[in-house]
Length: 230
Length: 230
DNA sequence: CTAGAGTGTTACAGCTGTGTGACAGCCCGG
DNA sequence: CCGGGCTGTCACACAGCTGTAACACTCTAG
Image (cartoon, rainbow over all chains, first blue to last red; front, side):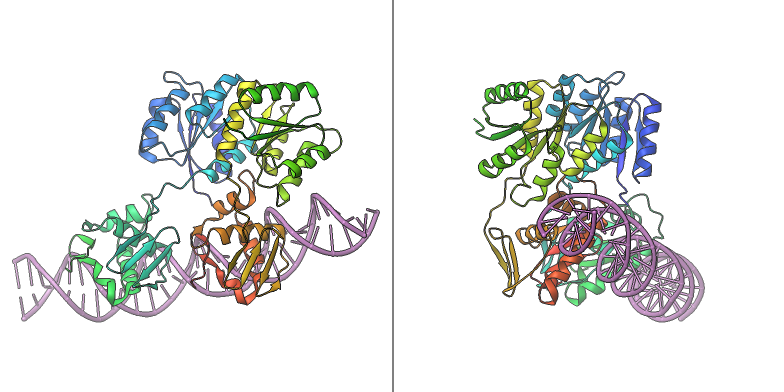
């Protein structure tokens, strides 16, 4: 159950297909692109967890794309594995210098690919913000994954945790059920909107009377996290 | 001005010499060994910062030596770069599985060697402090490699020891199974995530009821070592 | 005031994630 | 060569979490 998304950038459909088969067997979700512009669009749109990037590409070369990705704020965290056909050492070095996290020389076996990919993914730092947040005695600490209400630890499930974290990092603004599903559940799930209500309820209950006022209902619109009483 | 010490293990004096010249030009201090026993002696004696290890060695093979080094407590932190003459992918994979931090296929250029070596050294964790740690009657002493629960010595395997040591030096923070594999098993191993569960279980069992509360499950996230009860 | 829409609350059946014991392979010492 | 300790994986059990439906309640338009 990795669920990680891999973007494969190569102009040879056959090679892409080979990789896709290998990765899907290892339970990764695959995206494909055959050139740099297409790749860039997919990266911005789908935010893959890792990129397999061919060194040689028509138009903008792979190494060019890599360099650009490493420069942009929103994409510089995504690890890149370079695929190089030739054994030219210069390429390897330039790839590493530019910021590729690993490179593989063709031909390679599916086993090797998956092993290297896993290794790189493990090494990558999860990009999330790790700063603790505190509001009126309600504290959430991402590092220890702990929530406390006036020093007393709260026992909440994963979904309630994510929901609360989202609210605490997005205070004073109303979110529709639909938006919350997108942000907290993740865009690609099909869930009833009323499900949000239930989790809101669970979260309120866990917060207790001291803090449940923080989560406010905005009739006809959605919910809001605010220190100002409604 | 790196001052880092590099141990070169290869049975070909010519190759060693070539490497030595390249590295000394880049300002590394070099040690040389031509077989596994000699290497082992030097490692224990001089504690190099990194090891360049030939895959093929007379007697004990390089891979054999690597495996042993990664198992021993005092040497498992030292990064290893495998040198392999053949392009057999199996070797690459086995090298990575065993815990080598990188591998280079011969022939390679001095430039490449230095680049890879720098990269590995960059991501290598500076060896932790060897001070004994004690938490609520649970004591771990790196010097004597011993763990005691309220004075009573605990009998735990190497992996459980490393796991506990990591936890005790990184308290109050959640680590995913993936991160634990990275930190405790070593970055390049290919192991099932559920394996972590099993070793957690073994560690908890060894700690006994007095101390197993220290290792807490965070559902959906990973594990945490904390003196605060969940 | 009243119907209807919107929201709160509860119960529950299914599912996912974790705990646990067993087991076969490996390595090392005898 | 054999035996014991470790390790990684699997299968199964189980607890906790999840999404949904159903019903109660509240608000608001008219």
